[in-house]
Image 1 (cartoon, rainbow, N blue to C red):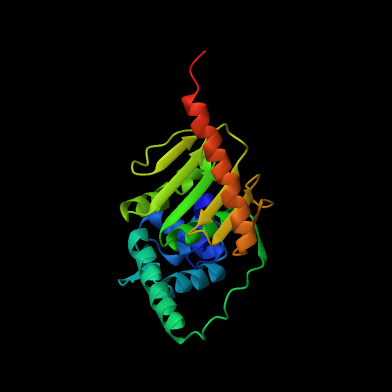
Image 2 (image 1 turned 90 degrees about the vertical axis):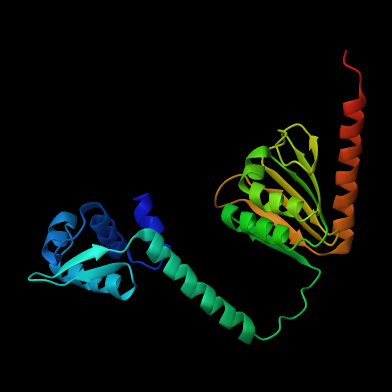
Length: 234
C-alpha cells in the first residue's frame, strides 16, 4: 500500500499505481490478465492501462495479442522530473516579480512543511547559520548542512548527540524534545517544535527584533555550554 501511495506522487491514479506495480511484478501482461490479477473491472483496467501509456509509465508490446509492460521506475521517474524541471524554469522566467517579503510572523504547520522550510532556509544561506535541533532532526537535514560546510560557510550546531559534520562548530546539549531553532545570516529565524506529523507548528520571521532575541538566547546557551566544558570533573 505504501508503494501505491508513493507512485501516486508521480501523477498516477490509485488504479494506475496498482496496475503499474502488477506489471512490475509480473512482466508483460494482457489487459485481461491485469484485470484478473488486480480484481479491477476490465473497462477500468483498459482505461488505466491507456493512462499509464499516456503518462509514460508503460509500453505497449505489439504482437498477435496486445500486451503491456511497465517502464522501469528509474526511467519513468526521471522523465517526470525532467518535465517538471522544464516547466519550473518556464514558470520562474515568466512569473511576475514577488512583492518584498514582510517582516511579520508566519506560522508553518505540519512536519513535512517545517522540514521543507528548514531545508530551503539552509539552501538560501549566504554566510552563516546557527541551529539548535535534536539529533533525529539533524539526521534529516545532514546533507543540507554538509553542503554549507563544503561551501566554507559558518555552521554552528547545538544538538543532544554529537555528529560527524567535520568543519562545523558543535556544542553538545541536553535533549529537549524535537525542538527547532534556526538563525540564517542574522536576518531570518525559524523556531518551534516538531511533536507529531500533522500538528507540529513553527514560527518563521524576518523581524529583526525577533531575530536579535533568538541570537542572544543562542549565544547565552553557547556561553553556558562552553563554561560547562571547562568545569573540572568531580
